[in-house]
Image (cartoon, rainbow, N blue to C red; front, top):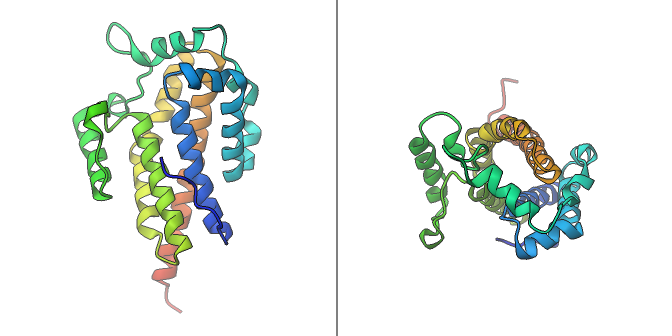
Length: 229
């Protein structure tokens, strides 16, 4: 993961950096909850980092989140067992898969399109780790990367437009499309509070971020192509 750029000088730069950090932390929050990750959830450390990241982007969204639920880890193995039940196993696949291509449409086309996004920016999946292009963590990491590059462009006085348009299109066609469906399926499974609140938080963040990206790309288009005087 890329680190957050320091010494930002404008609110626009700070917003892009905060969004990059938020995607980074949200992606990490969907890791398998064992070892250090499990401890971070139980201690409240992850909830604290998530709250800081979300509130830096949108305090209004932060006020809607039940942060206490993101500190509820249950017994020793409860988080890991629940993660497996929801996202990993099932007679015909998990009830709430984290792969966007499994939510309607042709999965191969969904994965191929995601790969084209990644390759366009010089990124390639790690075959040794068997990363799947439509997995939620992969997609959130890509958004973290694009928002980071947007921040760099702003800090250097360069055009952030290509990174903003890529973020807008990718969210709309990938995580922003399937995460609301993931949330609907999850609610039917009566999940542990941690997973219920985490998926709800992500859905709310993606919805707000897509609105933000649509607004900034429209503003840039209008500034570039002004109407008649």
